[in-house]
Length: 181
Image (cartoon, rainbow, N blue to C red):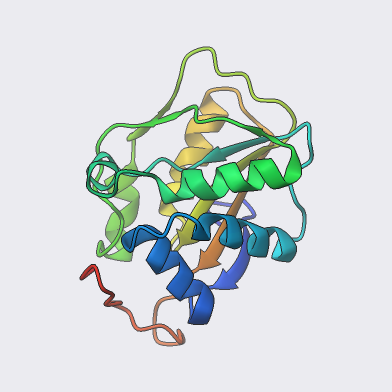
């Protein structure tokens, strides 16, 4: 749950799936987006229908400049192609640093007020908000609020991986990968 909204998650952020996400995000292996989308679709409780809309969580402006692409958009586009749902990118992210490395209690403030919806956006069916990894749910909660304020009500957030943190986690609190994140 993120802010009272049910979020479909396919996997814990560990093992092979974690490695694939990291290689997509930080290794430039864009082709992995299709595999991650297929794995997620086979694991989510429901999947988008052909009359639904699929939208990605926008990357922070700094990450987009650095990486050259938005991994959530690549995954969402692959979900759209696999299901026949409409793909759109109606969200605008104005500032806010990447959530990576920001303590859980500071994450809501980092994204508060940073998202807006393009004027004239019309979504059909259920709107699927797609991201690669969810840790605290702060980003998804903020976007769900933004979309709801714009009159978009039938929302279904879904992520490839859920990253548990804390003492019961099988994943270290501070992950280290080839990008030094």
